[in-house]
Length: 392
Ligand SMILES: [Zn+2]
Image (cartoon, rainbow, N blue to C red; front, side):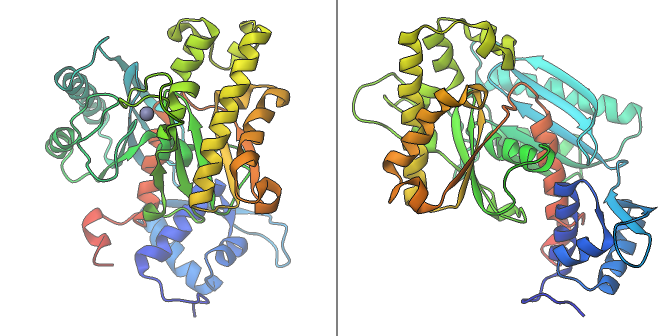
């Protein structure tokens, strides 16, 4: 008998199991049963199905429990997922497994001034490469995950950051990879999923806000366990601070993104953006920062803190994880960001009980975030064919 408070569909139960395995990397049966609120007998029946479908594997291992050895359950690495990630510089495509290793990666540069047509051609080339690679190796894809920066919630074809026709790409995918489930998402959601599933000792398990400071600045609401409809992007990067200020790529002036994105940071440091990208995490040691620039850097971090704090004022949340260049700074510099949150969060940060953690930047690792997102999509539909999900 199930021990859940409310009835769950077969899809939801399978999704809960796969989601926990994805986030943990592997679990013994007793704690897994507890985590998904199932009796060990019920769990056993579902694991039998998942194993028969090639979605999980199990190794007998001595476990630290009374009752001797039990099964260590993990996701089956023979499941093949395709990952496609669009960034400001390139389009990355890859094929990988459920535990995050990539077997194939190709990175296609975007033209200097991308248009809907030229980006469409790069997409077409990337999909052709993907089709050739999977056909030659007779690889059957179980899921395709695609991450697009700034992808809106309401209108899927409207993407002001990099011109790209999502509807058209979806159509091409449907023809080239008939029957393979395809999901598009905002890059911030993909990066949030990547960190939640792949960052060792990720600081939060419960509900929190994930903030990504890269080419743009954006957030995603994270729930536990992660569920498809609970992953919502939040455009906190386009919070405008008064009139004037630097022009943002969204067309407005004075957005927090125009002060704190990677391009804005490059300009402040007086370094060409490609050089900053090339340095990666090393830039903090490689680029000397004058005291004047450092002061301005802290002012901008404070502003980013205000944007995060105000987001929490609108939708209270107990924790915030911040990924991106601010994570690389010394604590003395990061303090400005924390003070910004404190300065506008209703009642202050301590009173509001908001925990903060910095996680490493994940920009430049494309298409790893899209791969994590593809694994997440497969887990969310319980590993079932897309068509049967509604019926389940
Ligand atoms: Zn903006």
